[in-house]
Image (cartoon, rainbow, N blue to C red):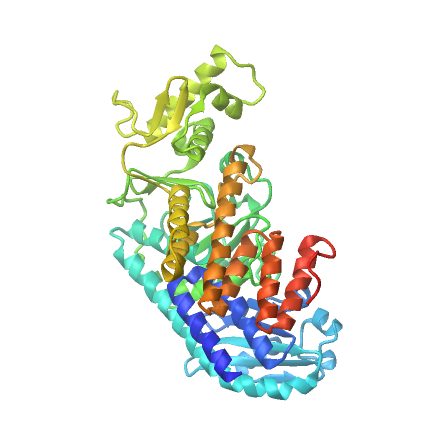
Length: 566
């Protein structure tokens, strides 16, 4: 077991140092290996916040997930994890059902008898707590011995990764040329680390800084719990805030984006010099759940608090925006939440003056390089209305409003350089520098398809880092984007299938598991991926993991799947 766990921890450290967005998938693989190596039924990881006041669920492996998610947060000194952290020693029981220190009644009801909480310790900090649960208390002694070996290694590795990520974020913040640019750099790193849709930083003094202007407005309520140092997660009773609802989206943006469910919001205090200097708020898609399987957003909290702790003091937030030079004329993000940056400055939906102009730009970008006839545009923008000169005139007014925003030198009579006209059709085909993430993603996938081995894996990795979420994810029910969304999702899924194939050929077992985890997060109903993963686990002698995966497959399938239980 020690050799296997050493390899897994080394692999996890290497992957996370290269791509922090893999955290939740890597933690899942790490806990699965730990559970298998110790012979226990369930493994959990709770990470501590930098202030050493609470522990937050960051990963789970095994059955009975909903019961274990009964509590996702423990204060130091509270419950088994909190006692282990406060006392800096292992807390264990062989009679879980009658142990009053254990605070998750649903777990006790499932018949688990043995439970051990092992703190991950450094001389100056508690990094987190590893929990192992079993229905057979006879396994506790061997599990405790194995934890004695791997816990110090895990503590050192996790702390090194968190510190490295924090230093990398600090370097990115310091590279920005303006205070506003530094704040945006922190927020962009936050998005990269979590795949959140959008983020906002609200300083205690000064104006908010937003990745998606006016699409997310943090509450301005007096006595904000996050400004008092509390973490808040919508829908999580242990981290409540009465002001956290789906209404954090502005009304105009909600209408323009076509959102029908309430997004999940996480608010984090931004600590510097022992005090809270501001609040970072992140918004996740409605219905999203992390790979760890826990409540939405809770798994991201502790890592983000560690990542932002170095950068907070370097922000020097301004009270007014400043331009950041050196960008293409337009940068457009469509994978995840839609947003547009013009000469380095993110645009809000209201900057397009007309809601239809904003929607028109989405339509044209979706068909980039290909013409859309005026009649198609009119039907998409004003469905069911009679055609003719009146509707066409409205389209021309809308096009004019759009060009005022996206064309350089708008209003000075220059030739269009972004939205070009082909007779009675229009197309998005810029003749000046621009970036479109969907276009880059597709090009990188095509490049990787023509490569082999490590080169292909590297290029696929670059492509998948662009895949922050589904195409126009904040317009989940818009028919206009369905084909492009399905096409790009299929590219992502196919890329991950090939990554798993190349990684298996190279003997990179943990990477294979992480690729399948990411694939099934993108498309949980991809039944061939469930079957391929089950086959891989069986082929590598991991029968218990294969059985757990088969149960998840059956749940996704809605009954007995065609693949027999291993």
